[in-house]
View 1 (cartoon, rainbow, N blue to C red):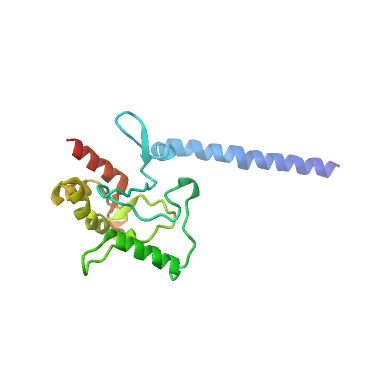
View 2: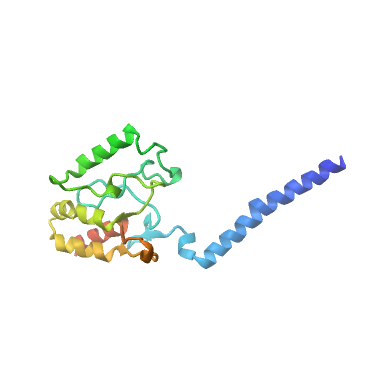
Length: 187
């Protein structure tokens, strides 16, 4: 009986440390060290309503918006993850073919790879600069705006990674870019 009580004390102590104290310390540290990230990097509109997060992709399908990378989880943040299908899977190839048809590239034009392949999490909020530039003709035509204006908005919403020296490339944040398009349309 004495061993059982000692074991139960150890279990309760371990649960307290691992499930209460440790997460509370990490949460407090996160709120102090990176308060914006700890709160979800939320993007709010002029009325203060949350419209998205800088960390999570949203699905855009209308022609007047830039489209993000495809998502194996349909942009559901509660179920992030890849499809677990092999790159050689016929389903992946069929999905890529369908996306290429949706983008309707001109003869000889290649659709950037990130527009037809999902990220590992399915929630990547960025596309490459090449993927954004590829979509300029569609977005400019749908909005009735000059391509140069759309290109300028892309440049304003491009994030340069801190490790660009090691091969990282500039990325465009899709939600911020689409919000900038809407603001430009109102002006």
